[in-house]
Amino acid sequence: MGALQNLFVNLALFFRESMVNIGFSQLGIEATMDLVAGIGVLAVIAISALVLIYVERKVAGFIQVRLGPNRVGPKGTCQTVADALKLVGKEDIIPDRVDKVPFMIAPILFFAPAVLAFAIIPFGENMIPIDMNIGIFYFIAVCSLSTIPIIMAGWSSNNKYSLLGAMRSLAQSLSYEIPLVFSILGVVMITGSLQMSDIVAAQSDMWFIVTQPIAFLIYLIAGAAETNRPPFDLPEGESELVAGYMTEYSGMRWALFFLAEYAHLFIVSAMATTLFLGGWHGPILPSYIWFLLKTGFMIFILIWVRWTFPRIRIDQLLSLGWKFLLPLSLLNILITGVVLYII
Amino acid sequence: MYEFNGIVIFFILGLLMPIGALIGAYILAPTKSSPQKYLTYECGLDTRGETWVQFKICYFLYALVFLVFDVETIFLYPWAVTFQQLGTFAFVEMFIFIAILIIGFVYAWKEGALEWF
Amino acid sequence: MGLEAISFLVLAIITLSSALALVLSRNIVHSALFLILSFVGVAGLYLLMQANFLAAVQILVYGGAIAIILVFGVMLTQREDMSSTNLFNKQKGLALLVASVLLMVISRVIWLTKWGSITTIKTTVHNIATVMLQQYVLPFEIVAILLLVAMIGAIVLAKKVEKAS
Image (cartoon, rainbow over all chains, first blue to last red; front, side, top):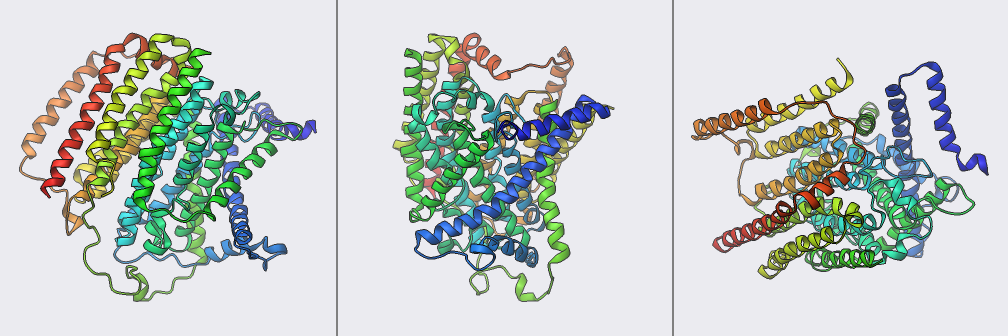
């Protein structure tokens, strides 16, 4: 077990030492390590998307009392690989009336913040790609960047559905960002640090879901809304807006939006694990296995919610964010502050 | 400097992966041109009227309230990190700060800035 | 030339050229996008100066909130053709005057500043909090009142527009 426990950490140490032996400068070593971590993150995004799409379809199948994908490979496990191969061969259509440059770069810019957000996720003990001192605040800032590519896509498509979808997406994301940020604040108040490693270390005795249950619920609802999934999928509600801001996209450009949405799902679940479920803490099994198990559990809950609740109306959605979650999160900050002060 | 390098490397990788995927698709995907394909999608009909229609003002009102709370966050986070060390004064100070903004929030609520209709 | 100097040059070119493009672009939505790019470039400069927190604030407030306000503001106005929505008007001369006065003020400040090299600071957030909550208490509370006044004022104005239309 000992070797498995620190498999990736030892691997990184080995890389580092061999680079020192070759005679790299300090800067070169750090940059190479970041590069390796970054490529690892890209692999995690690609593999998790392949697995998650399969799991999502399978869980949806079971919830609706049907089989789900079951033809390609054993139990249909190769279905998403086949789908991905099909997508590569799809024509990339750029309609005549679109504003070409913003239309073409919007999917790329939508994907980049997702990769940036992965930089501070603690995948295991000593396994944070970049352990920044403003960790969680960096995460919030990077998350707010993903609204701009959506408005670029919606506006440049020159399509009514796209523009409506993009505007709704903006209204939704600004209604849910404040409760999300305020719910994370409760955790920061207890920890007294923004660094991700400190936040995980503070949960070695007790998970923050015990001390911050309200914050956890707010985070879960706001996080589900951030991922634009049902019941909060108004920006792309397929029965009313075709596909929202993705209406005019096809082929690989559409696939990039899709991939980034699954990356967001992973990020929201991983952050819930890190902030409230004790991160990588757990007995016997290696830390990264615990992290993946907990993240998988959170993803399962989000999938479960998705296939259980109907889509809500836009005025209900905004009222829920502004008139319920925001006052509740302020109350949570107040209670946390007073309790911490008395102790 | 190392943090800066790391973020830049992640950003460049985040741009390179989609660009690589697009180049791959560009090489592999077919292109069969036909004029119908490049029309704006509108359920099979020709598109009518203006795309860039005027939107309701309530979007703008939500954005205004959002901006105020967004600015509030940047004051709250440094406070949350240090309030346990700074003592009673800082603690009371922040609650005055939040109270002033809650007055604004209640005003916005009463004035109907948070209503969709 | 060191890595830092190259990074600075790249970021400065991104920031300045997108600011220029913002002024020269004839399409107001393109202008808005260039403005956001310029904001992000400034955030990169903060990051290069190891002011992590400030960089995140720049992204959060300018790249997030201000950008959304701009977009909603653009969408409030009705227009038929997007290709000529950001044209030069008669106030060119006045704008030049205001801009050159601003340039002079900024140059003066740059001239008077004593430039030193930065030392690595472990946690910027702690220092910001201490300064904000102990040294500058009154300005800190005034910020809250300023935000309150700004919000109420904006809502009053927006409501008036809504009634008029």
